[in-house]
Image (cartoon, rainbow, N blue to C red; front, side, top):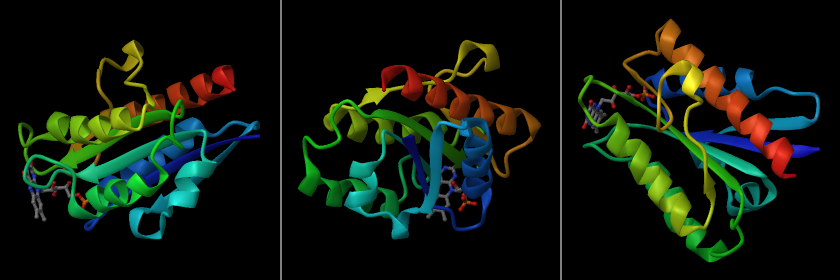
Length: 159
Ligand SMILES: Cc1cc2nc3c(=O)[nH]c(=O)nc-3n(C[C@H](O)[C@H](O)[C@H](O)COP(=O)(O)O)c2cc1C
């Protein structure tokens, strides 16, 4: 059994909706999908997962402080996240408000952990990870499900 951890911060629910779409897409018999709010996510949760998908609202063009705190705390497990699969998602208030810069702020931390980064499958047209402006619409929900599916397929192949 392989484990995918989806951890996120969400104040008004947009990022949480996208987390749930990713969870749906990732569901497979051979996979345990764990969805946790970031405040409930420990270094042990990160270490036990084979793939980690992190989501944040855009705050000033970057990840929100609770997500940054998760990564800052993870310095204690430096080198223990190596070769895990990583992916990111974000929601913003404005269409050019910083979804990609936020996704990249998360990916940057994952790369520092030597994780293997996964973006959107070409079939949904995105590139860097699932995102939405405000609450996810049907297209963003499909993108979230596709990202979950892509991570699920890869984690099974790599394990
Ligand atoms: C402190 C703060 C900073 C924000 N900064 C941005 C920003 O830089 N760009 C943007 O497009 N939206 C910004 N927003 C809006 C949120 O990213 C947006 O409403 C998001 O979808 C909220 O996600 P949630 O419902 O999961 O909490 C900001 C909101 C807050 C509270």
